[in-house]
Image (cartoon, rainbow, N blue to C red; front, side, top):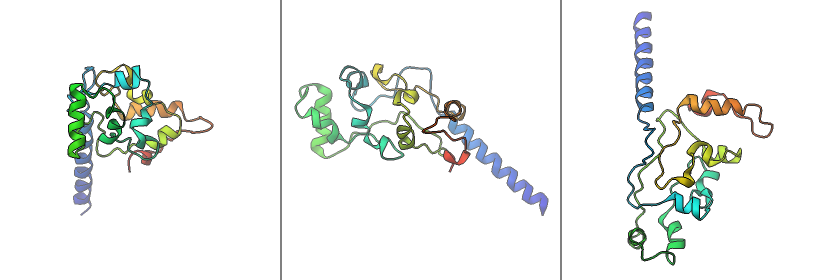
Length: 176
């Protein structure tokens, strides 16, 4: 009976480790080319040239675990009057007029066994660029950091003694 139980425990742990490892290799880094999006949106223009704050579009980052992709209505707040004749804005307006959201392609994806809370990081003063890189310079957003456990822990270790927002090394902060 003990041998069977030990075999089940080892098999379960091996399966979980295999899934976690395979998901961690799904991250593509190195190429400065993000996924092709349904609309050629440029962070280089919006966040860079126009100096729009990340939280204007990604409001959820300071209020919830998820940063959110902005609703098409957020974009149309400006683009009902700005650059309306541009081909990409015409596409955007089409989504808006049909009552559809833009089907953006996800850029950052964590393995299923990892939970990340944007709100905690924003409230602790972590700047978007610390994890997302020089977005203001990216015509197309790509995954800048690996977001692998060691990468995150390096940052957490640096902030363990932060008097206002000490980071945690507790596993359940990310794995729950």
